[in-house]
Length: 336
Image (tube, rainbow, N blue to C red; front, side, top):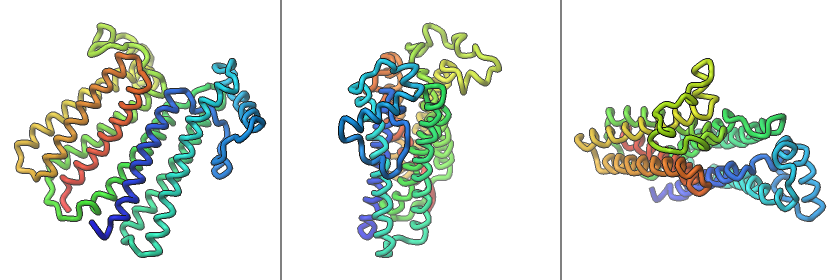
């Protein structure tokens, strides 16, 4: 680990910056700030408006957007500055993340600190990062045409790409942090992989909930306003549309998946405690159980309190750490 310490710090700093991006992105979404910057300049966009003339010029561009015309038509320049801040900060951290990746990568290449496998993995990470930036703008563009809101499908792609980029970064770092051989456990590895799939689907549905404001309404638990399956869940025709386009069908799916994931993690933990597993494996199961319970509690309170920003952001951060804990479990259960 000592000889790879700098590389490990580089990779983990990338994970932390992606987490920060997720937090700022969540705040940007919840404060309805994501459509405040109506153009994209990779280099010139680093510099914000610096004087009153530039601010007014930027505000005039925003006034041409559907969001201003249909929703924020009474906004003053001061109101605009408050929403511009979050979107600008989100994009600025994205650019900084790119520099944090590319500069150390070039240094490690020159110093020959990266194996062939690490070079290949780093190139994949670079491509994922570049793709994420492109997806971000593709998402924003969907809200600048007619409807003053981004596509919930594009939002889901944007969020999921960020999560998977961090998951892969963490996966690359783990063998450097724990270089010793692992015996693994095939049964637990298969279960952890299934859990990974379930959590990824749940993250997608979490993005759907955010994109369609599906957390507003039916703010009770465990029933939805006194019913287990209210008619609003299946009101659209054909039926399948309710689960990818209708807010309450999506909320119902998100709730149901949460129960499935909690039950499955409890099953994994119960069965795992009976198996002869190494300490790291037992620890990973305990971490999984703790995080999934915490994440569920955050989800319930976010719902019943009608999506306060602080709880909604914490809930999103909880999903981030839950996915990382699943990645860690996959690592310790995988034979090396």
